[in-house]
Image (cartoon, rainbow, N blue to C red; front, side, top):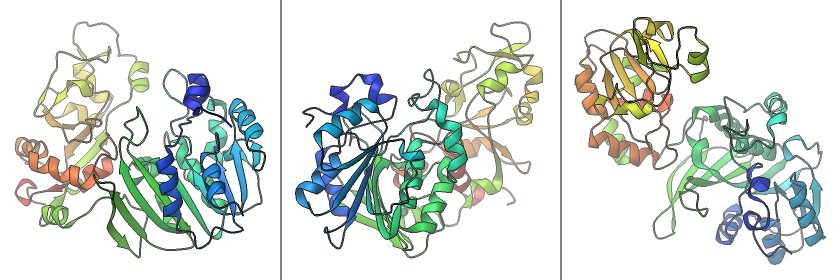
Length: 415
């Protein structure tokens, strides 16, 4: 039996490149309790990405009369686990590509998380050659996608008609647009229970986490939160769920929204040009020159003002032709930060510069008081509303969040 967690027993790159992270024993126990199994006898139980079988070990110690199976891709980890837990049915395979007709009463675990890609940019580079295959297999795959989303889809498909999924995952699936298909999939497959734990669950990692429980064949959604004392309280329960973003709606947030208009009705919300596109443009340069200005990034954006002189992009572009990258670069508009710790940070681009990042609000009708809108977006009242509604789910602000953001009637012009 391994006497140390994966992070200590193996070389860092060996576990990190597969997205593996050990689960604290207290979280393992909590997940067993939240499974709310009617009986712990005669069950078929699967732990995907099993590692050292932390979940199977604990369940067997408490409830030995079950069938225990685990899937592990990393050969080093598999060899250690297989020699240590001979009573488990351990299979050396890629869970996402594992072809099995067997169905399970319970699929439980801590799936890997991270974006698959090149080692220089993305954490899970050990699976880079399989990414295209994953994209073709999983209906929930969208955008860059995080591998834990694919684990959720595969696990749900392996459940028996009344089976249960219990995973601890980053809470980003509640909110990010890349998980819209996954949320819709969960809504169609069963009753979703989410237990938001926030950041600090895993040592030296600030990612906000949630325990996801899916009761196969059920309907609706329940959202819970663990408070500062460790108690779990229910935020809401709904008998219908359509797969939309999952927010901590309350009487306070509803009161703040009352009488206001969603920002998406007043502004077109656009995302900036990305680095590869700009770098490939024949007018882009890596050094300053006549008529060239720096391509701005989020580091230049501050509440109510833009630093046009200090930028980190290292790319320069003709100001007079910025609209060739994005048409809206050529007009005065509002820029909102994409990654500002979950806060709304906004300023007016008075000089109509090119941007490599951030989101851009373009008025649907003329005559709006952009200065007043920016003042509201940066206000402490709005920041408190966003914090209450979205907690620390993600440091990113999404286009969907911006579209839903409530704007006072007096700032909305004729809408």
